[in-house]
Amino acid sequence: MIKVKGLTPSRIKIFRKTIWDYYRTHARSFPWRKTRNPYRILVSEMMLQQTQVERVREKYQTFIATFPDFSSLSQAPLQHVLSIWQGLGYNRRAIALKQIAQEVMTKYNGMFPSSVDLLMQLPGIGKATASAIASFAFNQPTVFLETNIRRVFIHFFFHDRANVHDADLLPLVEKALDHSDARRWYYALMDFGAMLRKEVANPNRRSLHYQRQAPFEGSHRQLRGLVLRTILQSPEVTESALIKKLKKEPTKIQDALEQLRKEGFIRKKRNRYSIA
Image (cartoon, rainbow, N blue to C red; front, top):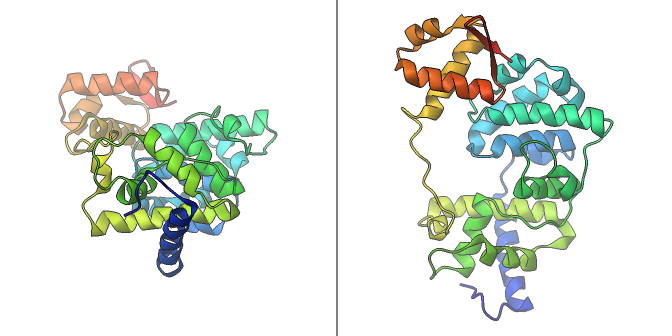
């Protein structure tokens, strides 16, 4: 293992070689890696937030075929966008994508901004996502962490420590970054991290930021999804009809409806609910 202290250029060279050697023979193939189109890379990055890659692979092509660019997405009814998004979960990302498309068309004349600072001003995009988009769409040598990248750096540099803070990892990510090809370097790191998840005890459990995802079955998140899906399928549905159809506790359905309304997913008119 490479130690944090005394991280020399020669050790960085060894680390890079390990990652690149693995990538050359085990690189994963995804449709969003075969494009430099900023819109398509944005869609993939938003989908990949908190969603397994195989589920994204299934939905990505359909979404791109339905909404091929910022213009088409910006003009699409929210109900259509959400119906195509169904199955990915965390539906607020679909709203954010539509809002981004509208902002790109009105504020940036259809040209997606390339700087991390400007990207972070768009709905639903934080520092890590903005940096990832800048690297993948524009090959900028940004510095960021995501699940697989975090796993790689903890595995190599903090194998004997617990409660590793991201602040300890980011300087190493920056130091190891291959500026000659930032895009493919991050792909390589992610693929190595995906391998580690299967081959060793998950290094991310030693991260201070590690949290086991709460079970989806029976959760409030699942109920929200059921409510939203029902409204998509039955516009102008009443609250009583929802309660009868879903057979869930009325107060929980009422809470879900109120949250969805406040977050801009649905609207209420004369006790009937439809997509906003």
